Each structure stands twice: as structure tokens, then as C-alpha cells.
Length: 224
Ligand code: IYR
Image 1 (spheres, rainbow, N blue to C red):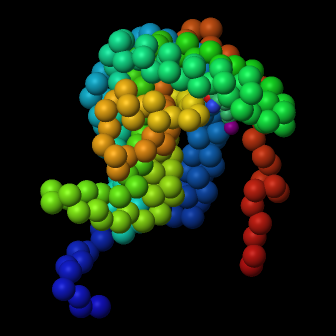
Image 2 (cartoon, helix red, strand yellow; image 1 turned 180 degrees about the vertical axis):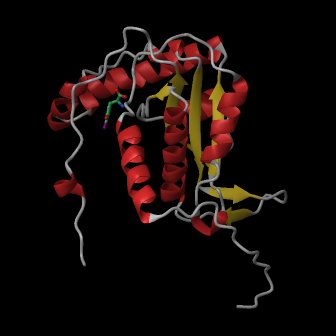
């Protein structure tokens, strides 16, 4: 398929036999199934290089037309964390007390969440993921990005997997609305906040809700 753009050979990294594949895939499921969203963090520090590496791992995600429409901001400053907590709690208080529906509040009961977000000041890092809805070139001209939600969602999935792989924990937090993050972090007009992800080690006494994942019958439908 000759084109004016060059393609290069793909070197397959591994080729396992079926028996090994089955064992490895079972082990991988068990490993990922032990991931939990954590709301209780330790203040134990994590090296900055680790955060840089997991973000670069997230940035290997597939994206529409390879536009890589994401920006990852890492907050470690106590002052900024405090500003983010104050602004998030202000919005969350309004959400929990009047904006969320009865059904939504009922659905959240097993998680025991509320408007208070102490973890925003305790976790060593807050990773704020922005989606880039378009690009602006040096002449100020706008250029399209494609499948931005899907692409940034995939990058966040990669990020959460990398965090779990390392024995660290995270919360996919979505204070709503999130535009305060654009202001506090002084982000450009083509970026919108997508997820706020505190990352660190779990607190010693951390608990998680006793909730279950769906069984195979409910998530997988074969068409052979
Ligand atoms: N954003 C709020 C509420 C919340 C919403 C969903 I959907 C959750 O799965 C959990 C919480 C909060 O972070 O508390």
C-alpha cells in the first residue's frame, strides 16, 4: 500500500502458546480485579519520576487520528491542593444538597461519599487530566481533534492501570462542574477538565465499599 507517508515494520513483542496465554490472561484478570478506587490516602511521598513515567505510559493510548488530545497537569503544591479542595467542596456541596437527583443520591449510598473531599489535600499528587477539544497553532488557527472523549478516556484507563501495576492507588474524581480547575491552573481555552485523579499510597486504615463487579454473564455476549 504505497502512500506518501512512510510505514515501518511492526515487531511483535511476544508470541506465547495457547496454554501460556490462558494462564497469563487469568492472572491478569485477577490482578486487575484487585484494583479499587480509594478515598483514603497516605501522605507517604512518591518519587516525581514515577508520576512522569505513568503519565507518559498513559500518553501511549490510542487516539483519533493520533492527535493525542490530552494534557496531564500534576499538582503537588500544598497551596494549590488547598485551593482545589475549597473550590471542589463548594461545588460538591451544591451538588449533594440540590443538584443531584434522588436516584443518583440513592445510587451513591453504598459508596458512602459526601461533599467533603479531604483526600484532595492528603494525596501527594493530584493529576488533573484535560481534554483538548481543538488545537491552536502558532498563527492562532484552530485545528480539529477527533473522538476526544474516547481518546482521553482510554488514556485515563492506561493511567489507572499503570497506577495499579505499581501498587499505588487512585480515585477517579469528578467534581461537577469542574471549570474551577481551568482557572486555578490557568489552562488555555482549548482545554477542558476531564478527570481529577488523586494518586498515592493507601492510608494504613483505608477501607473500600463492599461492592461487587458484574459476572461474566452480564458483560460478555458471544456471537460465534
Ligand atoms: N462527584 C461526586 C459524586 C459522585 C458521583 C459518582 I457517578 C460517583 O461514582 C461517585 C461520586 C463526588 O465525587 O463525590
